[in-house]
Structures are given as structure tokens and as C-alpha cells.
Image (cartoon, rainbow, N blue to C red; front, side):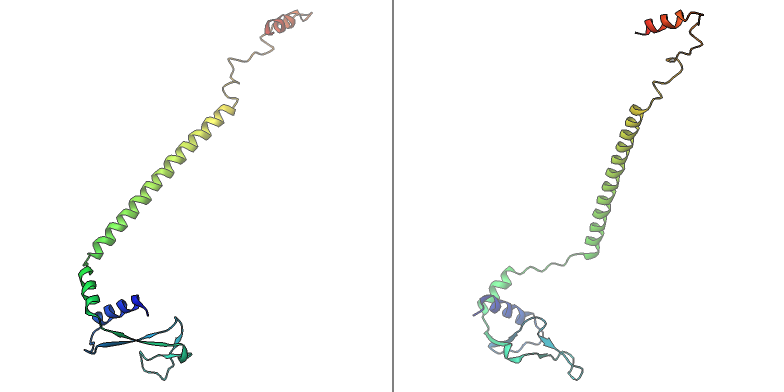
Length: 154
């Protein structure tokens, strides 16, 4: 009734230690968190809250399934320490690139802020070369010099 379960049972039987040579495999199907264990039970022994909801399935051994699974089986023996070092190196490089990008963006932001501050500043306008003092205008008794200055201004 469960075709995928049959394949899983075959693989499980192959991978188990101390399997018997019987032609059927007995499996118990239950929901997760449906089992319990009390202190009086032996290690590895479990009980079920509602035994009527537990399904017991007998699966016939099927060698063609086992043979087809063995053909596609791949066993890898990776160097986990080397893979971990490579991964850590990649993470460090990513963090370094991110940090460089943030620093570059911060420099650009600082330059933009300095440019805006310079544009809004009166320092370049208010220098002494551009200013005239009323002492520079030679005052006369009838204020004609001031009128001439104003006429020249417009």
C-alpha cells in the first residue's frame, strides 16, 4: 500500500546490523511524538499513547529493488576539515568585501557631505577682498560720495 515505504524498508534492512534472513520485514508506523518512555522501561523500549493507532506493516524482501538502489548508491568520503576551512575562508572573503564596500560608501558619503557643506557655506563669499568698508568710501559733507557709490553699485 506504500510503494515508497517498501523501498525505504529494503534500504533500512540492508543498512541494519544483525539482520535476520527471513523473507519478511516487520515495521511499525506511528505519528511523531506519539511514543513515550517511563523510568521502569529498559533503554530503547518505547510504548505508545494509543496502541490502536499504531500500524504494523509486513514488507516482503524484494531483491530487484535492492539491486536497483545499490546501482545508484554513491558513497562519498569527503575531507570535512578541508571543506570547513574552505567555507570559513569564503565567509571571511565575503565579510572583507562587504566591509570594503561599506568603507567605500562611507568615504563617498563623507565627500558628498563635505561638498554640500561647502556649497552652503558663506566662507567663499565673505572674504575681505570682496568686502568694502564705509571707510573706503570717502565721505563728504553733503553725502554725494555715498550716492555715487550706490549709483555705481546698480
